[in-house]
Image (cartoon, rainbow, N blue to C red):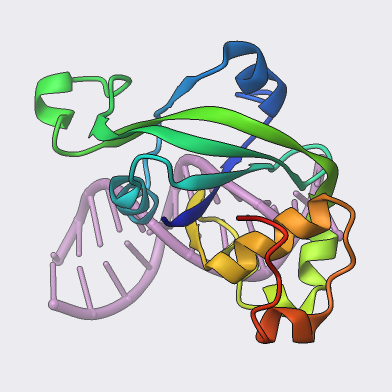
Amino acid sequence: MRYWLVKSEPEAYSWQQLLADGRTCWDGVRNYQARNHLRCMQLRDQVLFYHSQGPRQVVGIAEVVRSSYADPSAANPDAAAEKWSAVDLRPLSSLEQPVSLALIRSTPALREIALVRQARLSVMPLSSAEFACIVALGAGNRIRTDDLQLGKLSLYR
DNA sequence: GCCAACGTTGGC
DNA sequence: GCCAACGTTGGC
């Protein structure tokens, strides 16, 4: 099981829209590094959903329900078939408390997170500890760094 | 809305 | 293959 984070501008596609749709094709990624991450996604991998406009925050947890395939939004499907990829996602749950970028930045356990280190990447891998940390923060838990280091954080499984 | 960071393109 | 120019993204 791997963990990921995807960004979306709510105006383009919001978490609320994903909840309403029940499932969506995550297409339109036009960055090679992000695409490569999409291609590594496996069925049932867990995906944090981040809003990159308005309040910048992680708002929900989604799940991969179809692993990567040729991006149907690519202009020329024949030529683009090998070039760009998409996956399907479905929402699992909303975070009780969205986890803001500011909180992520100020949480020592999340210092190495790609969201902070590589701001422009729109699809990125998370370690299981990073994922668990954000999910715990989103449930309103206060995170103790030593809990993470000792691997005690099993609030999310 | 501005600006810095970064990815891509194209000329050589 | 390098690098400058340019476009885009994202944080504030």
